Length: 144
Image (cartoon, rainbow, N blue to C red; front, side, top):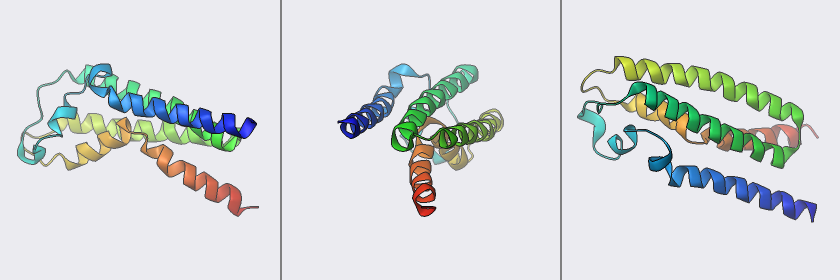
């Protein structure tokens, strides 16, 4: 019963991540969502409120992080893994957010925007979860 409840909670938490993605247009200010859906390679960045964009990206990262940490907790039930994950999420957020902000403020009119696309992707999608769970699983069960 306890294992079933654990699996159900992981599925519900993953569902929250899906809901964040499904309602991204209504929950967060992000003109880059539609910009990256077209042939953006030679287009200038759209006009945007950079503060609102940064706030939306940070809020989305925070929501994804909280849910991701809850999933990691449900999978491993290990405080040390949660502490390390929180430290890693914090450091990666600072690094990627600084790069994201730098690119937004210094972008040329028609530069390729590839770096912006991928840096933003790491901030708005729960990609770290997809990297951390297998890594922690391998680390935890390799040492047994």
